[in-house]
Each structure stands twice: as structure tokens, then as C-alpha cells.
Image (cartoon, rainbow, N blue to C red; front, top):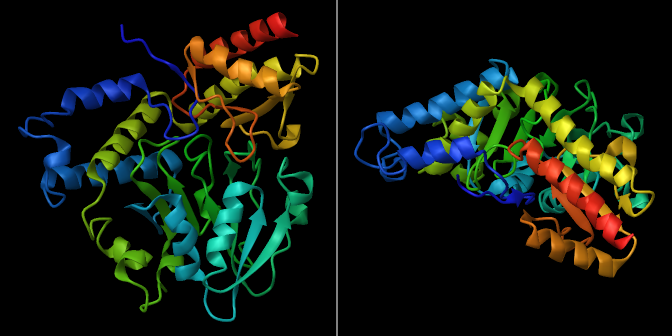
Length: 363
């Protein structure tokens, strides 16, 4: 049996062994074609089927309404930080942002290059350890859209519910680190985007779900590649797509469906993260969660040990035991376990046990 690491990387992140083995079987010869999916023309019937099947699976799993388009683009969420204001921020309007941490700050910084912006709410005064209350979000009258980062991977915070701003502005969400991890009412949003490399597949492809009316007014002065309507008209095939990454997304969506769909994945994720949060909360202060309890993420568990030298020892000893990716982001330090969809329950149980043993030896 293949030995697998306890992979808690923040992204690119764990993929299910079943998905990897399926890709391995088809890697050299995709369904009798005598070549890999990576060697095929993106205009071929075989690849178009992959592209269409991935869209159909996503629509079914997420309950995406018919008046929304599903796009597979390139450039990561970082390109979407710019594409959103380029396409949605008209003269005389503002892009409103809820500031929840590192990634929302980057999104705002890009938007400021293209027009007026406003901060609708912020938890900066609490070092981004919480998500602002929905009642504290103030959307300016001139706002074209309200942008949220549904899950902050670095700080380990996550929206428990989403703001309802339909009467005032278009709700836009960066769901890069919690896409398909829990049920979502897509109709609340005008646009959702997500890099695939955490919950949806490998790096290289970015998912965009966009409502008809939001996409219709892409400014014609923009380069074709940066207009949403370009990719809608071409069914994500305007240029050569990241074909292997889209194929892997398709396999990942099939895996989620085979496990019972998103509701079952959501419960599985909550069961996984509870093991680790319990190890933190029941440690008597040896471990300390970074995010405030009401804003804790089910995708990225951030925590500290009271002694910086012990944190270094924790990393060293965990790596020796086969754990990968537990070092906190370089900007904030500390420790972090990313428990995305494909991280097995067994890995989370093993980490919780390691944490208890480490505390017993060093407490």
C-alpha cells in the first residue's frame, strides 16, 4: 500500500488517493485515445466532454441556477482580484470590501487601482481574529458590489453566514479556500470565484460562477482575456485552457458526489476539525486558538503554543512523524492545520493524538 503523508498543506493541498489513482490509470491513455488528456487538442470532442461534464457536475452539486455561468479560467484568485473591479466597477460607483485578513487586503489593494473603493466593515482592530458581525457591514449607497473573502486561510476565520445585500449591490465572494466544503445558496451571489488548489483540484484552474446580469456589461475597452463575457461566449475555451487541471476538477467533483454530496462533505469536515479544536480547547492553555471561537474556520485551524521554541520543536517532531504543512504562514507565524475536503479523518485524528502526546512530553 502506498505510504501517504499526513498532508495539512494550505495549498496546493491534499487530493483524495482515489482521485490520484484514477488519474494515474488514465494518465498515458485517456479512454482509449492513445494519448494523455494533456496531449489532446482543447477543440477535440473528448476534451469538450470533460469541460462540459465538469460544469454539469458543479451545477448539480452546488444547485447553481440556470441564469449563472460556470467558467474555468487561469491566473488564480489573484487575477480575479483585478478582474472583478475591471468588469464591475463603473464610473461613479465604488467597490465595497469587508476586511477580514490577508487575502481581503490584497483584493482591496488591486481594486484601488481601478476606481473608488470603500471598507464596509473590518476586524483589523482585533488583528483579524474574527469575522465582522453582519449587522456591522455598511454598504455605501454608491456601491457597485460588496466583496467578501468567505474564508481567510492565514488567519483561520470563516463567515458562518453571508450578508444579504441584494437590494443594494452585487455580492461577490472569494471562496478559494472553502469552495464546495459546505452548502451555499448560490443565488445570494452575483459572482463567486475560487482557485481550485485547496478543495477542488490542483493548481492551474480558477472557478468563476457568475450571474447573467453581472456578466453582460463587461467593458469593451478591456483586453479580451480580462472580460467575463469573452469566456462565457467561448464556454471557457477562448484560449487553450488548463486542460489537465480541469480534468482533475472533474474527477474531484465525481469524488464529492460519490461521497454523498456537499451536505455530507460538510458534516465530514466538521467532524474532522472538531478533533483538532478539541485538542486545543482541552489543553489547559498549552495550545491557544488564534481565531475567536465564533469565527473559527473548518478549513484552516490556526493555533499557537505559549513558547516559540516549543513551536519550533512541534514542527520538527511532527515532520519526523510524517505530518506536513503545520507551520503557520510566514506573515503571522504560529501553527496551522489545513483540513480541506480531501484531508482524511484519520489524518486529523492522528494530529489530535500527536498534539496530546506532545503536550504530555513538553507541558
